[in-house]
Image (spheres, rainbow, N blue to C red):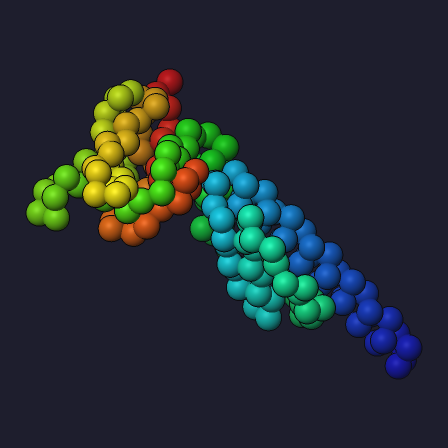
Length: 164
């Protein structure tokens, strides 16, 4: 009886490691698709943190998961959205603003219809205000950056579902 328990425990550890490896692969794909530089997910006892473009320290050995790791609903939704939309990326480093002034209404909100060439936001770089325009007509599905937060070159700002 004792041998069977050890064998099933070893099988569960292998299954947990396989689930963790699969989670890391899927998160890596999501990181690339969304143009993110960093992503962190915690599921049960497993914590995964991915960074792109930064040398990573040698990770400690992964602890086997007690149960298979489930993807979060938010990660699954983002993966579906990225497959059907156009991502508007930051063309420069600066500060992201959703409106022309602190008291003005935002240029766009999630769910709004936009036209090609419509202003979506402003990025302030070196005291210059740069208007960022939509590359496509469609509906704003997701706004990835909070107002008045810094952005990096190539960082995803908006996800737009193009008009059919």
